[in-house]
Amino acid sequence: MTRKHFLKRLFQLSAVGAFPFLYSWQVEPFWVEFVQRKLPVKNLPKSLEGKILMQISDLHVGDRFDWNFLIESFQKAQKFNPDFVVYTGDFVNHGTAEEQEDLKKVMKQAVYGKQATFGILGNHDYGKNWDDIICSENICQILRDFGINMLKNSSEESHGLNFIGFEDLWSPNFFPEEVMKTVDPSKANLILCHNPDACDRDIWNGYQGWILSGHTHGGQCRIPGVITPVLPVENKKYVSGEIDLQDGRMVYINRAIGHSFQIRFMVRPEITVFTLAQA
Image (cartoon, rainbow, N blue to C red; front, side):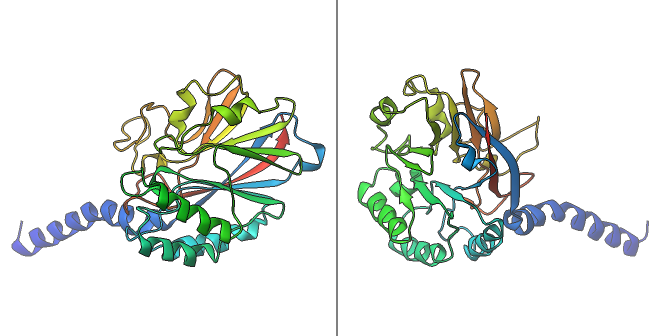
């Protein structure tokens, strides 16, 4: 092999080796997927059949990636003309003053439901150590100022669909037991819960129905059936997508639109577009 041929082969191999890194750093983190699927809800009013409920989770506004991507994704999401929109936590990365100002810029372009828009907080909305209540209150107020109806261990009915929202499992304010005592099983109920590990806590009071979660980012990097190296939950079956809990509860884990670090491999950022149906 000549020196020239050797150097050519070395360059080719280097380019091939660099491609997965470049793809996972510069392509997939900004390649949002709109996952479309049915959401069968018990006791759903006929008037809501076929309506669109959109789930957006884990914006992580901060300095880890260019958050203008979120605005561009919102603009695409608005074309679905959703009837309901739910935001399931982690609006910021650490909740600094700068992040709060950037969140305002992002939420100026937020996606809203024609009927209602709800949100819950995630662990990152409680500051760097997930225990800053003042930070969480500031984030919550910003979101309310932009028309997001924030649920904090509380519920609210809209057009016959009852939304129940938990505070984050890792926060100092995780006390969902009281609101779960008030859930009427004869209604069409839907629970928003950022961290799916809460599904394994003794808090559900016999609830049967859907739980919409986020938090995991789907692991961000994954080879299905082989490895998901970063998964911030105790129960490692809580990765992404639909999971039947075998007791009348179903959980859907959104893969997140934002990132805690700018790298994704085989786990595209997600906005979920549900079509409501009677169960």
